[in-house]
Length: 373
Image 1 (tube, helix red, strand yellow):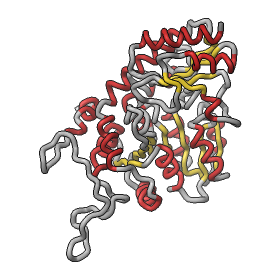
Image 2 (cartoon, one colour; image 1 turned 90 degrees about the vertical axis):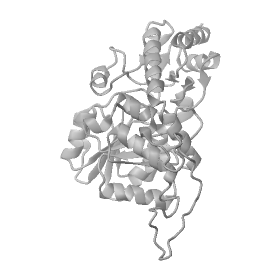
Image 3 (spheres, rainbow, N blue to C red; image 1 turned 135 degrees about the horizontal axis):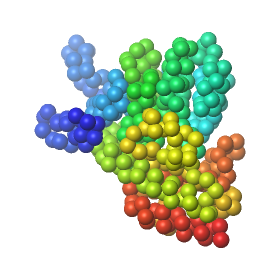
């Protein structure tokens, strides 16, 4: 079956006891031991093995084409666990442009990290060391939506004995499946598109193969306790069942907005890989299918104050952090990231939802007109 069908039916799982199509909600935090103190049921304690995780983890594994998946309490919990599963001597290479929260944590966590422009493969090759064990990419990269060639970076990583981990939060398996291009680990802030309704916080890691590194990830998840609650796992599965129609609509809306605003006299630049004028369009077309994502950014003529004024004048778009929900969000990103942010001060980040595209465009146009008048 195609992934659209697998997602819509949640793999087609039915509860054995009740024949319910929607899964039961498992709330027990502990499980009964056998008389010999064993656990023939396979369950010991909810922090290490929650039955509420089984179906969403299996579905995400299938959608990505991986070997296993692990849910976490947040995208940051998942991402930091991916790095903590390395050793203290391991060198890591990450993008200069990436989710600012993870970038900040990484630079404070270790000095054994290099930040490079992942589009420059020669620079990346020179950054490799004998102890480089992971290259981390985010494509398209938040919030300027630069595109990284996954296959080319995977070749460099593997030639140097390193693994490639990809933050695929904004692409989702609807648009890009990083394992098909050579990645070894995929991370999702499941708060965003996987859930899609702005009502839970969650994260996930998916592995291409079960190995010693993956064993450390699972051990750390249990030891550190960064696990998802049962109700949140239930909500996440519910959200994932509408993943394909939501993401496809968001992609179509983002494309329409990008094309329309590219001709708007109040917009200095539109950053979106779906535009043929985008520097990363050719690579994006090679590794993205069914659309170029629901995220884009615009740089407003008139600078920072005009950008802030545009966000202040929208009526339909919601001024809020996050992305990937059914509602469209707008944010002046530099204000959020603060000092040291590589984000241009005139940039507005847009998360296109599933509303009517013409309504979204009209609202942006009137806000731009007011702010730059």
